[in-house]
Amino acid sequence: MNETYVEWLVKRKTPVYMKLLKILTIMLAVCFIFIGMLNLVALIIGGLFAAAAYFVYLNADIEYEYLYVDKELSIDKIMAKSRRKKAATFDLGKMEIVAPVKSWHLDQYKNRNDKVVDYSSGEEKQPDTRYLFYYDGKQKVIFEPNREMLKAMQLVAPRKVFTD
Image 1: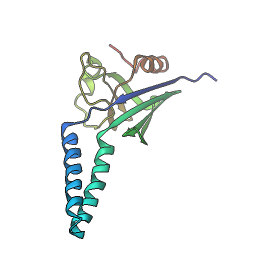
Image 2: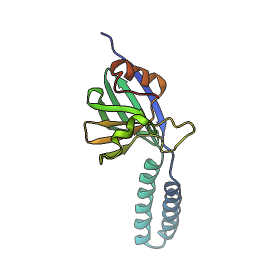
Image 3: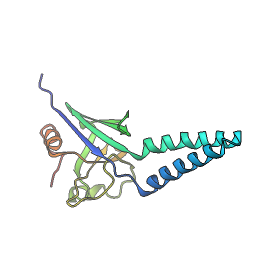
């Protein structure tokens, strides 16, 4: 059986507000726990802030793993390098077009009001390595594949995948 297998990992840039929120929840948890030595209510509030700090920590450090296997792109969300969650699975047959974010090939799709889903690093690099595809007439997906993954996708659907 002739299967194509490509794997790629992209780290999402942590927004500044998430860094500040992480610091704030940790500081509030520590303060309320120290105050909680005198008051039970403050100890409970400190525990709640500690739980909030844990969840903020998980969502502040995110990576996306792209896995392309035989005409199917699977995207997993890895939180804090400890928890993995299946984000989405896309069939190459239902993709309308795959092209760089600023490609002229996407001009005819500009006026569509599809739901935008971003599985990229979240930052525009020079040169921009982000790609965009329209899926099943419902979603506009931004992702950041490597050259090997693009070549594998282009071998299967050469009229849908553009690298400009």
